[in-house]
Image (cartoon, rainbow, N blue to C red; front, side):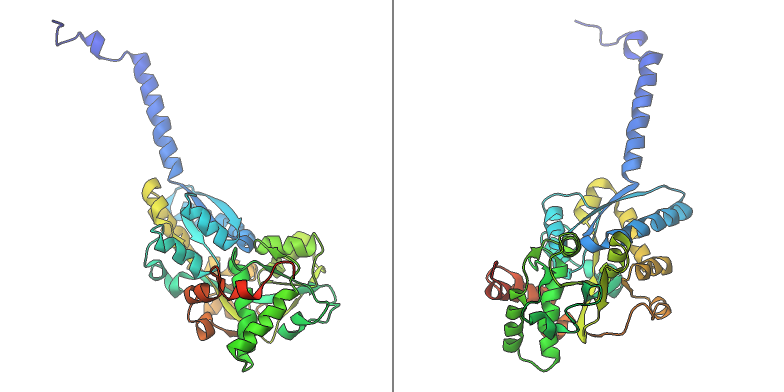
Length: 345
């Protein structure tokens, strides 16, 4: 029978093995600490430049207030496509989308909190935007309002409302523009049907739409978020496009949420919340204004009144109840959009 007690030499690690273990443990702990100081923000297409600047500001703020470093990675595509990717397992710590339906989709699947809209001010939407027209320099087709988009010979570039919030807001803005002038839902449907007959190709997301318009040189007018005007000027040079403010447009909220499924696994919940909280700070609101994203702060908005031109706006609730209801009626398979849009016609 073997001796139950082994010699000290057999049971104790020699100094070499001990050093190796300590070094390995330090690397493991260091790696864990680093992982907890890293976030992934999964966002929509046209917000990429805003978040590039915001991430730098947040990292500096976080370092100053906590003494810790943080690295924020970004992922951008059509809002709905991003929501599906997160639902399918993409480990986002936070989502920053452009439609509440994309966050609701994740909430219904247990990926974000059911009460996500109550976790942050303004229904968890720190900024808003609206839909404008971008036309080629000089506005050769003389496009001024929604009615001009259904004229013969006018080609409209817009995002597929099934793949991006940009596209859903464009669709709802067109529909609501008819209602704002006293038209019925039947008249709005007729108008939107004519509108999509002038759409040569549906883009996957906002940035894809801009590329189609400017790089592939397709279309006479691009319908997109107000903030894209700034991005176009920066990426393609000023003088390429003119912004046209229609007589009326829709208020687009930009909702945010912590991805509970990911932060529970990674231990990044506190950091993720701090990241989204900071979006409401004066500094972040100023950065939003710089990128033509409308700040919620009345003081910051007033300060940049010359940049955010007055435009009559209506809310989604006014004609559609909510984005969730609009999704069911207009954008789910077999909905109004499928009835009104036929590819290639």
